[in-house]
Image (cartoon, rainbow over all chains, first blue to last red; front, side, top):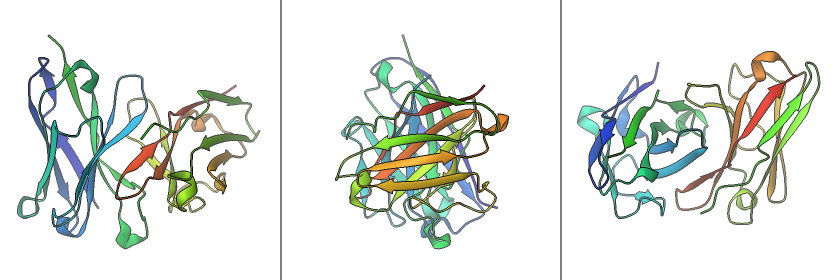
Length: 122
Length: 110
């Protein structure tokens, strides 16, 4: 079955950087567009970035534009999120997720990872 | 894109029906049928329970149903059960592969 596993979270100081990874298995990774979605402690979900299967289309939420960079390595079945200039407002659980449109889930995230926690604090 | 404003909490007794609203705009909820709903239990990843306004993934109870009128989407849980106690989020496609989530609703089973 399809599985997504995030890693790379941790404690980082304000202004610092962190790179998250999401390892995918059980699918032909390049066939799927991927997203990062985050959830601050006690808060709601926030979509932050999208990348197409071939990386030719990339989009960001205004809250992270210019600071975060999404990328993928289809040969490694991996998705990444490079996060720079971090602030306390970026403290959250970060999920990678996909919408399996081949199975009819158009723009609905039916597969989620377990999430990785990022804490920005001095 | 601002979050869609859901009621913070909704409660009901076992067996009752409850409805959670997700009001949006013509740019998101009202722009297409690409509205989905997610259930999240504490400490767990969200789970898709409704997609394309009304469709249920395999394995999701038919007690969950979705609808939309204009720019407001709704999730109804009928025959409320203790296991339905969770947070629920709507999500709408906002164009050009961007998405907006609702603020979330905590469902309490009395």
